[in-house]
Structures are given as C-alpha cells and as structure tokens.
Image (cartoon, rainbow, N blue to C red; front, side, top):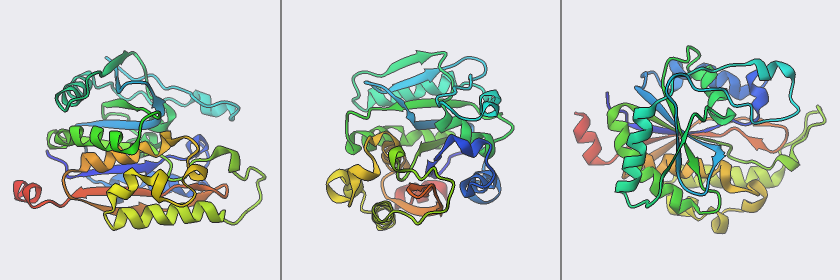
Length: 276
C-alpha cells in the first residue's frame, strides 16, 4: 500500500514516557485513531538523537534494543522496553536510494537499537511494537538543504508502504527550560520562532525553512544545535514534489519547548493521478 504522507513529530522530553500530564502524550496515544489510520509496512525514523558525520542507517536483525540516551531521570524510565523488529531490508533500500541520488558515502551501524527520539513516541503510536523500525542519522554539521535532499532521495519509499517520520522538537534549547515546577508563560523568543516556523510551513515557504538560520527570528536561540530541526527538512523533502503542510498537534512544556508536529502530503498532480 502506497503512502502519501510524511511527518515531523516533536518528541520533546523523555519524561513523556511516564508523565501523563504532558499534553503531547495524548496526541501520540491517539495516533492510529486520529492522525494516521493506515498501518505501515515499516517505519523509517530520522531522529535528532542519531547524529553522525555521514548518513548512517542502523541495521538490526531481530528486535531493536532500547537505548536510554538520557541521564538523571526516574529509574522507572530505564526499565521501559520497546522491542520493535529491526528492518534490515529497509536499511538496505535507504542506503541504495541515497547512493543512487548522489550521496557518495552512506554507512551502516549494525546492532544499534532505537534512541528515545524514536522509541518514546512510537511506544504510544504503535504500542504493540509490531512494526519494523529503521533509523537514519542526521548530520548536524551540515545544513537544512542537505537534509531536504536526503528526504527527496527517500520519497519513493512511501510507494512501498514505508512511513517516514522525522523526530525532533520545534524548539530545543535545554538550557532555557523552566524546571522549577511552577507554571510559566511561553518565552517570547520561543513563541516568535515557533510562529515563524508554522507560517513558513503552512505557506509552503520551504526554501525559507531550509535557510531558517538566516530567515527565522531567534533561530540560534531556538536551536543552539540544529540536530532536532533537521529531521523536519528530511520529512519535507520525503513528502514529494509539492507537499502541503498541516499542523496536527501543538502544545508547550517547560516554558520554551514546543511540541508542534506536522503532516506533509504530496499534492502534486502526478502523485494524485497515480492514486486514482
């Protein structure tokens, strides 16, 4: 079954795995009922927590290990498991697609499991852990256009029933989070960046998004490191030639962390005619 959508999901804090008060948790729990009803053949997740010099796929035969790539959190979080099957055939297809598109080097990392940018949202989206999952890394030393082109190379995978998800955070500056436990207003800089990003996406200004560091207000404040935004560029590119963006969830946590999540649908006439 061919798929017509890609997604950028703000996975936010790993506390979402145990904290039911985080609003985005309810969004992920309702995924199969309200956001994406079709069951994919496999999932390709581009996570901000998988950052390598060259594009890299994890190659896992059997079940994925659960990676606890966070520190100082409640002990119960380190007992959670998400043993989704690996997707070695998909990893091979991803590598082939990228090399065919002109990416000269694509590495394989055998045995690497799922980081929390993948398994925390997926444990609510597909709690049965029965959909094979492969991860692809970002290259935070490069730029948005590089990641958009990664996505373009991966777009044909949707026709094979592969769900492509970019997992990051619409804003991600951990030093600014309000950890006092007391309610706080949204920081103006975070709100301005988040609003700019929403407007640019909904208006289809993807070139501006690719050059967000020059175009967006407070870009460096919102993303001191771009690793959590670059999965967005991959999702846009993978959507196809003329993607339409839709805001499918929005909430805030800790004063500066936006959980804005987006769906991208290929609305090009060629793709639509193929579906008829």
